[in-house]
Length: 559
Image (cartoon, rainbow, N blue to C red):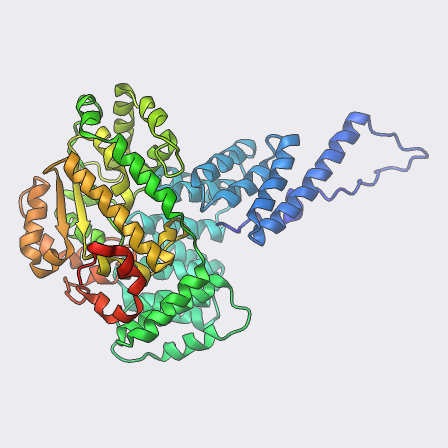
């Protein structure tokens, strides 16, 4: 969620004090009833929005939303109410946030903060051009707006242009040396470029200057693998004992401590920290609702469904979808393929999810009948063409463009409807290893299944059930890339991958770790190294702690 609101609140909210007359009058004229009503309404709106702001800052989002709704009921296009609603929605309903920010921009088209937040919302939704456009406009209006410099740097880092991000962060730091987003952001850009030592220097300085300490420690321990206890470790433990620590800081510090302990092979202590991090996050997940969503997907997308829609979509072979559970090798797979000169790795894109949400193919749906009937042959071609343009924006000449959003495994039916000739690479990994690798990392609240070991195991079973269905519907079409096979014989499996993509072999694919470009997923350290086998059967290190996970996985757990 975005807690930023425009500064100088008084400039945006009227004080309500009646201005003094500019000349003496024995009996000042009374304003008309209409003006009195308008003034009273404005004052009431301002009072409600001040309360909404306080609630938003305190993360009492339901209260903030209700207060904004009261204002919008009286003043339907109140720009500040629309803006606050956007900040409330950002993070859990980004589509709604986008609409609110766009309406605020429509009301005050020269407000840099509204453009900035609209650009950030576009960035969250993987809309690169729109994100850059609005954040750049904010900087045109206010060139030294540090938040906008950092936001644009973040977008460039996210979309494989960290070289463009660096000067933006450098400028931000010249303006405000201790700005946390600038400090952490420049380290992220350097990390994305593989310049780990420089990133570490910025993070250490951030810690010394007490700038976003928890996040800085977490990022710092990701920059290398430890073979002996670093000096920072005891500092992390001291930070954890500070009174009044916020939940997000407690989570970040426990993840950092757990990572160091794990590197040092102190596995029981590491797992204890990971468990505390999960408790601090407190995410929830409704596994029963998710199971119904998988049922609906399987019941809807059958061989007969596709047989009667054989003319749908676009026949382009450019799109490649790398799917699977998070931490199953999707980043490694993308990096190997994208090292080929005719392949572009676009990272994790949310475009397909946006299309699915727009037509109603989501976990909250009670049935898929209505969403499916809306997808006519004409609409399928339009959606496919828009999606292809979206991909081409990133790589106009590439023969293959990879979207490695892992959870597109839920949307294989939709993507196959839009792109019947798209290639689908399914990354599969040992079930216990895969789940443990998820559990020890911070995921957002949208991945609430990752908070509890039993729920995580049950979720994995639903993922496996759906992938088995897709393999039956699209027999022989989906390439299964086993993580263990890849690390056992990288060259042989890499050659199979490139062959599946329909491209000639290129030796650059064997040196993917030398590839320039940003890596912004939790795998950013590993993919800067040659293929390693240390993650195979890693779960054995935690065997005593993961009994609930093994029980939930059932017959999928290969003991």
